[in-house]
Image (cartoon, rainbow, N blue to C red):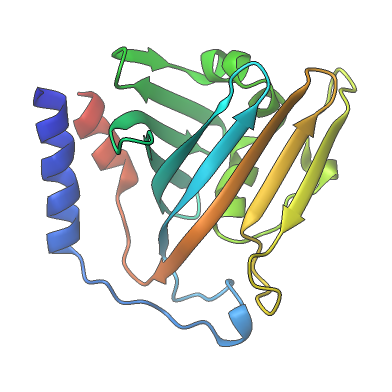
Length: 193
């Protein structure tokens, strides 16, 4: 209960203390020097060793990402912190913390995909098969898509790992670029502290 209250307080503090200035980007370009953060929501779907669908909210800087996942009942079930070279997760249901190797053993696709590329994807940049670190020559296919064909920003990625018979899809329902700087390290330290 204490954890829930801490998370609830932090999210309310963040929402009350920040201005919600949405930046309109001409021509859907995301390489503006005025953009400092990105927030949004979406869903992930996994087929294979772990089957299911979770919705998520995210806050991101250019170099880090904080995700909060909810189940179909709306309960917060997982917190995820990504930096350019690490992934940390906290399963709120079982109260277990995971590091990069633990997370990548549960979702093998994450063992070959650099966390930095996931951060860039949530900013709308493309992920190609060439960006996958593939030491075992696993057969991984990447499919990218857009909900709106007129939009140049990618908002759906599907990773198909044929050798492990696993499929992992990330869909972004909404994305807002802001001029505000978010200190995500501070939020993560308070939550796990």
